[in-house]
Image 1: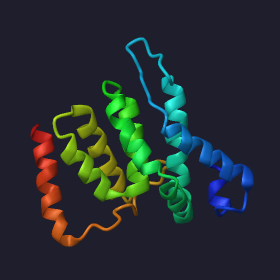
Image 2: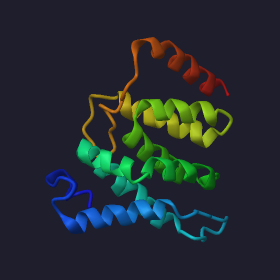
Image 3: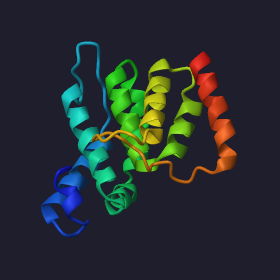
Image 4: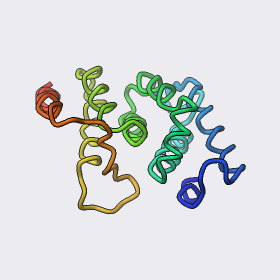
Length: 166
């Protein structure tokens, strides 16, 4: 679906619309990944949800709006606490949410999870992906600052410094 999304608008391709709805509905299902790697989802299945939805979000703002309308932000935000201990999946989840909601979300999650190293790491990576404008790649989030004012920058920098010291 992530390859087709840049070429279609929401509503233009029913199979794509249905696939995106199905992936978002999977975000509402609990994730339990015990030590041996099995639960309601396996790691590959969780990645297979976050990765294409993030790429669809980056494809066109219209897709981002559809995902927000379907509650993808709220559903994925709930998953962060279930991914404790799996740094890779926490990064995928934060990256997807950064693609969807931009810098304000990343700052909010950094504040909420300042004592969780893996989430701090994921947030820092997302901030780098948002601010880095000299690379071309699928995961780059440049342009996702979304509603950050100049007045908020000093507070964000202070928060990032606190996170690095934590």
